[in-house]
Amino acid sequence: MTDATNQTQTYEAQMGDYFALMKPRVMQLVVFTALVGLLVAPVGVNPFIGFVAILCIAVGAGASGALNMWWDADIDAVMKRTAKRPIPSGAVQPGEALGIGLALSGFAIVLLFLATNALAAGLLAFTIFFYAVVYSMWLKRSTPQNIVIGGAAGAFPPMIGWAVATGSVSIESVLMFMLIFMWTPPHFWALALFVKSDYGDAGVPMLTETHGRTVTRKHIIAYCVPLVGVALWLGFTSIGGPFYLLVALALNIWFLKGCYDIWQRTDADSEADNHAVEKHTFKVSLYYLFGHFGALMVEALFRANGLTAWAGW
Amino acid sequence: MAIKVEHEIHGRRKGRNMGVGLLLLGMIGIVFGLTVVKVLGLTDIRQMEKFDHVARPQLEPGALEAAEQRAAEVAAEAEANQ
Image (tube, rainbow over all chains, first blue to last red):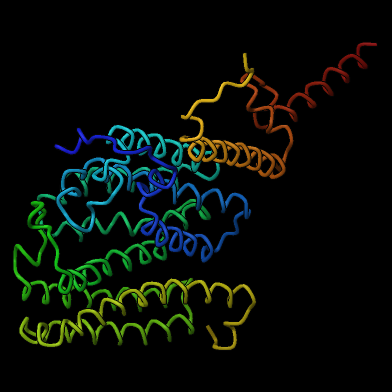
């Protein structure tokens, strides 16, 4: 923090500007994974309470996004990709973003506690703290492993969804957490290999710039291999099943192949075909996560209708 | 003098004001809905009295049964004395 704290307000901020503070695209992933965590849990939840819980998780994620934008306003202003965000563009004042972030955090945590249970609310509070303080304020500017640890914040929503339903943490929810946690680094670094970023200008240490692209390629495969183990392990828990395992097997072979290809390539190969493999693997990584959580949801549907019995599961 | 004073800020902030209004309505809907769901989900309606911030010893576990037993004992004692 920052020169951007003295931004001049250039026009009247609209609701859309305040909404943009909450990083709506990130919220989509949060809502989807939290919903899956809630629906695959063995305990049923009243639909209205489930709706309020997902809303609270989404608002909590949005609040941490607003706090992140408040803290990172100085580097957002430097980078082309983020220069049009509400604070650097002058639409929203930093103080407003801070106020909105804190107020929505409090609102989401208290309401989640009243609607569900203390564990779910505590996990949400920890997630917001982790993203806003541990990631944004501490790790993002101090280590090239920033996105690895920061990825944990994005991995908590299914665990919170599960806690909403069951009031507990179990191996299933830990594995759902691990799936997103281990998936984030190869997903993000595949992107970093083909997008020309200006993190360096903003003073944010990214692995591609601090340790080079060859090391980044090795890191991608290093995270992908244990990720496969986590994804398949999930298939043998109470929320897994034959359908999930089939989908997981296909997706893991596909993603592992992409990560392996990235590892085997040199930067010269990559430049020669305009980063085709990196772009393809990044796209596969998106299918990978949505595919796994979608398969868990389908598996829960099968289980609810007694359709997994045919496979002797 | 006009009863309704118009100002350019009313038009400029119309979207924001509408948005805040909708959010407040949504908030009311959530609190109302949660209240309905929670109250209908109570297994024993006496649980509601836990939230009236008044000490209610009769809500302690087994209190009702103990009181009934004591009343029966008192009644039996009174009958024996007659």
